[in-house]
Length: 167
Image 1 (cartoon, rainbow, N blue to C red):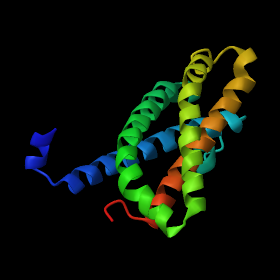
Image 2: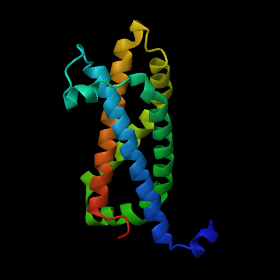
Image 3: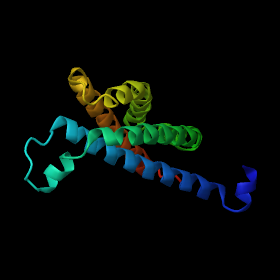
């Protein structure tokens, strides 16, 4: 990878990686939010053409593979970025005494790892959308993953705001 740094600066590389991670996180967040709304508040009657109704009227199973792939890729990029965070970002945050910020980030790490573990179950439940026995489990695992994704997204921004990535 050293050949790459002949063309771009090291900090630019990490910034690009962080931006790609953020863009994938936004895509994951959108897909999971649509799917969670569709399963939590399904549209009962056609004809209402409001924004919220159209937002909820998506086909939940169509998002399943995208959510799984996006979660895994975003997780892997986040793990790669974590090396830089651990050395260059976390230490100064500890020195400044922002323990709550570090705590919410630690929780983010644990929840996203838990989400990786739930993905096979999530995928299986969504690959069988016609089975009414899975409706409740499918609903709650989707809502759990969506809440985890929102938490991780917001906490990532908080940590970046406490100590900017390129600081």
